[in-house]
Image (cartoon, rainbow, N blue to C red; front, side):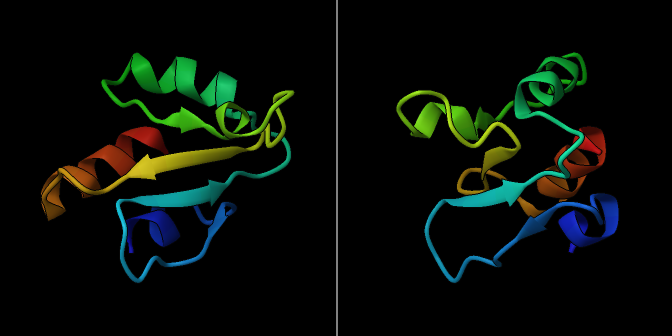
Length: 81
């Protein structure tokens, strides 16, 4: 819900299990630039470029939801936005 509300231009498929969600950012936002800004707000994630040889997926991010409670996730997404 937080991703839909806070990042309406991003897309993702709601996971039915696992530990991560793959977030496709809007074309004008690179994951590298977002990561730099996110770290200043105490949030981190893995840019999509780390998962493809040659640095593909510059506008994607892999977010973990495995170790966080509901309130922590809501706050993390708010900070990311």
